[in-house]
Each structure stands twice: as C-alpha cells, then as structure tokens.
Amino acid sequence: MTSDKSHTLQSGPQEMFMTLRRRTLLSAAALLPAASGLLSRPAWSAAPGEWPARPVRFIVPFAPAGTTDIAARILAARLQQRLGQAFPIENRAGAGGNIGSDAVAKADPDGYTILMQTVSSGAINYALYAGEIPYKPSDLANVGLLIRVPNVIFVNPSLPVNSLQELVALAKSKPGQLNHGSSGAGTSLHMTGELLKLEAGIQMTHIPYRGAGPMLAEIMAGRVEVGVDNLPSAIGHIRDGRLKALAVTTATRSAALPDVPTTAEAGLPGVEATGWFGVQAPAKTPKPIIAKLGAEIDAIVKEPDTWAKLADLGGMKPDLTPDGGTSPEAYEKFVAAEVAKWAEVVRRSGAKVD
Image (cartoon, rainbow, N blue to C red; front, side):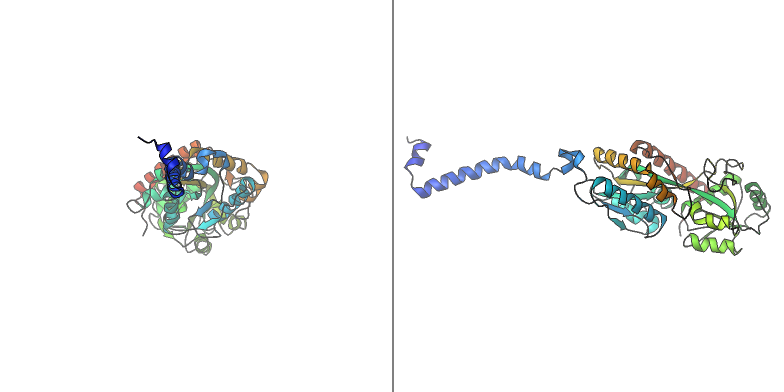
C-alpha cells in the first residue's frame, strides 16, 4: 500500500498543486468560525473604552429651534469636543415626540443612536397615548438627566387675584367659567394645569394652542385668564408686567423670580411639576457605553461654560436648573417616578389628545 505522502511525491506537478490547494482551503475553512466571530464582534465588546469609534446619531423628537433642540445641540457640541466624534442632530418631530422616540427604541443597541427625551415624550405620553404609542418605557435605556425647567402659573393682570389661593377662590365661585391656556394638548404645561385643577378642586376650561407664543399672546390680550408655561418663555412678559406670576411649580423658588412663591408655599404642595430634558438610548445598549456616556453628561453639566449656555436658554439666568448630573441608575428611578406620576394625573383628569 502506498502512503499519502509517497502518493503525493509520485504525483505530477498538477496533481500536487490540487492536493495542496485542497488542504489549504480545508485549513482556511476550519478557521472561518473564529474569524467570523472576530469580524462580527462590535468594537465595544473588545475594548469598551474605544467607544465612540464613529459619529453617534442624536435624535431630537421635536422640531428645530425649540428648547429641546437647543439643549441637545449644546450637549452634542461638548460631547464631540470631549469624545472626538461628531454627534449629529437629527430632528424627527411628530405625535408629541413619539415618532422620534420610537425610532430610537427600535434602533440597533450599539451605542451609535441616542435620544433627547422630555417629560412629555418620556413620561406623559405613555398614558396619554395609551394603546397608540408604539414603544414601552422598557424599550429605552436611561442615560442621564441634563436639565430641569421650572413651570410658572400666571394670569392676565386685569384678573382680580394676587395669589394662587385667590385664583382658586375665584375659580370656585365661577366653576367652569375661567379658561386656562397651554402650549398644546398633552404637553407638560397642559398637564400641570390639570394637576392644579385636581389638587385645588376647581373647574377651568383648557384651551390648547400651537405653541407657547400664541397662548401667551391670548392671555396678555385678556381673551384667556390663566396660563401655565415653562419659565424661560414667560419670564420676559412677567418682568415687564404683561403677565402676573402667582406661583412656580418647583420645590424651591426661582432665582429669577425670588418674590414669587412655590405652589407648596401657596398651599398646594401636590402641584409640583417641572419640564425636564434627558438622554436615553435603545434598551440593551451595552452598560459600559451607558456608564461612559452618563459620566460625560455628568461632567458636562457641571462645567461653568455649559451651565451658562443652558441658563441662557429663553434669555434668562439662571433658571434652567441642572440636576447636577444624575447617574443612569438615578435617572432610571426619576423617569419611572415621572411615568407613574403623570399616568395618575391623566387617569384622574380624563385628559385626552384629539
């Protein structure tokens, strides 16, 4: 019997070449599983510290030039400077923020798509759009809270009230006859008004507008008596006397309106609400990436220059109060509490989106 080795040696040049070629291909095939595993392995799994290795898409679920968009661009610019990769903004507005949020919830959880979330799209919508919203809170991973914005309750100066309690008394004497405006149905401002009515036991008719500007104009003209707005939008009109501020809805007074009491000081501690903006990512985004991005947000929020830019939103200082940079774990608890809180307000008020 002739051995494989002797057979090969005795074969012609062409047969020798074919035999060696078969052995080479078999050896290469044996290595394919390991090689394919290396090729398919995301960069972060081998070295989490290398993230980001390419630009990170930053989705804003609202139109350009609004507070959400401006805050996202400030954060994106600093993230690019600190991490060496671009964070291009992509505005995907519609359905109260649901369209952009859903796009992130369904994106690959590879750390290269993140979301600028708000109290409306990140908490209120889950109850307000019940049965229609295409994603769940668990579809998004919480990274960090960027800023909180005080809300303010105000009236037309001609209304004969000088405090929140006087407004409540007037509303009780005229059930359903006073109107309260907001920047739109389903916004945190609409729901803050609903919370006021629930806690005070009063009836007022909600008038939604397409943004804060039209609502403020109607109240200053005297066609609507009461309004709720984020402080940055309303403060200029309050300072020049065209609106009369009755209370801010935060736990502490605003440095910009030190003489205006909180709702708790006015006897309605249950009426506490803030607008907030934070960063989320698709669920199952690797924890090392979430931790790294959260640490970056924490550091950026604490920078004096970033603080100044955030505080300047709305043309006032220093009324957008950064949280101080919450951890992903703390932000997770914060969002869960906000979801539960606003679900109860929606349930009790019967608020709906037409």
